[in-house]
Length: 478
Image (cartoon, rainbow, N blue to C red):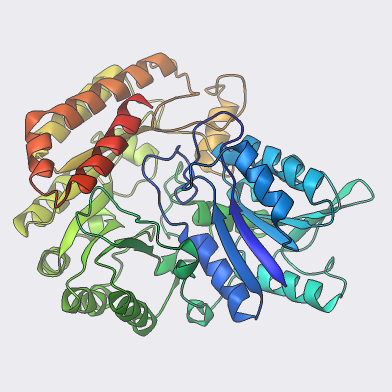
């Protein structure tokens, strides 16, 4: 059966959404590993699978319509995030107009959360939460002409009413999943400005995070998985890991395919020293340039040494604030001294550090706390700093607090680009003040001469420079 995965063009007039992290507009293109795993599962099951990324092609609405007029896929899969909802709904309407008999399947956090926005006809299905096994079962039933309406993990429309089947059990053994179907991307030259080597790709070795930060939605897969699990169990899902042997096999394959740089997109890549050592030995063997996300309390003398010895070009640390009262309020589980200690260890072993500062995570935040955090960040002389503004994502503890206390402008959540805008007002801090602080500090950190010189000397080609410059321009000015 012919199946097409679609990333529609931004036909709602907005900038395209970034569908991996899921909470910003695209700064630089990222391969959507989550969707490519689903595609690989369906390929493995014997289906004829295609992948059409209209954003990478800079396509418009007319090009999308022309594609639909010529295409004969039986099923269209769309991975949707909050910032892509309106564009994806317009794409859905076009598909239904041109291909009335095709099944449209939505996955990702947006349809998991906002069922009514997507289920507009009886030829549309929402796969909630973790998608792979549900997608395989759904397509197999359709292939055999069997009744698919009873399978776990889906919602659909029947007689004008939304039917929501019971949740599907989480995948216990991630090693059963095939590696992402990267070959479906064609020869598009993905690159990451933090990794000055390409071809580049992303790798996922685990799912979810065991910590309890009240605001956190680390990725679109985590968000979808967490929303669905909380629907039934009212708590976060357990973290799942691929075996080190399975990860090593994927890294060996990527080396054979000519990849040179890798970003690990796990919510927390560093969990156990033994696991890190085995993976880093393979990264070092293949001379990969790579980076990851981690918590500062995972950085020890040993882990910092392992990272420094294996070609790690960045560790992305979510620190949010240097105010201990705020860190306690948001249940971060760390304090300012832990942040400084972790950064010092990474710098000792010459591992570049990227800090994530999240503005407005607590009603304790004020202009003074923000200025103090920014002052302390400047002293640390890290490689990069990413400033965002917290959003009250539904399904998080922070959303409940913000809604109950009337901090959300308009009364409820609307999709917001956390790199640029705020929908929050605190008694001591307004949305305008947060946006102003965000912009000013982005200008300071990204346009200072030391930052420009540090990064410009690492570029290996003019194309690398163009990619980084374009990403910086989008980040600062939209």
